[in-house]
Image (cartoon, rainbow, N blue to C red):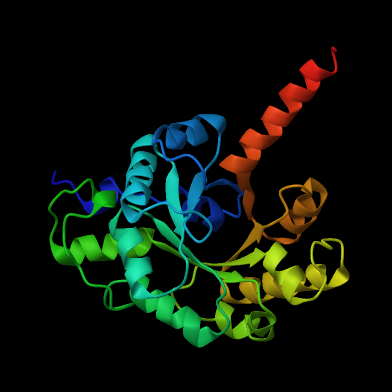
Length: 266
């Protein structure tokens, strides 16, 4: 029996979200070594996303990390600096199974991301063959494009007041899989920097979750790594993708803990 693209290409995040299960993700901003993918998988994460909006990784490094994730059986995603095709398409070509686009403000912007991320007939992404998620195997283009479309996750970040005003329209965009709330940037826009208990942030989550429920989309939780109580509340409400923190934050926290334990012996 001939091997088909679907036999080797799976996005575990999309599958878990479709079953209404909670997804644990870590963010990579510091570690360039591909071993971070195996560490994330061994630790029990479902996914990691490389945050090239907030770090200086090259596309080459990003691709190497994504391909390490594919080999380790953990879903690699990339948060790009913006939704322009030169970012979206190239990180997907490098092996990412999902793209996260920050500061999306409208349904039109969301549609442009889908156009860049998806092949025809959904979008306008060019097919160059030899896709990393397909282990660089040769498949008929029509099969490969369909499999990659199905596996590629399109996420837009809700972190502006303009986006909140259009949350229903953004959630309705065909091809968008998830609306991801960036709590830090959103509270900054609201003029309540870091006030994570403010009812306006909770209202943003409630509105986004409801809009996504109506349109069969998913909700991501960002910026709340230090507030497991709020994460638990929003998961219960229906936001099932949880960004747990960064490799930099994890390393810093453990280093501080170990140093404090030794210093306490003095």
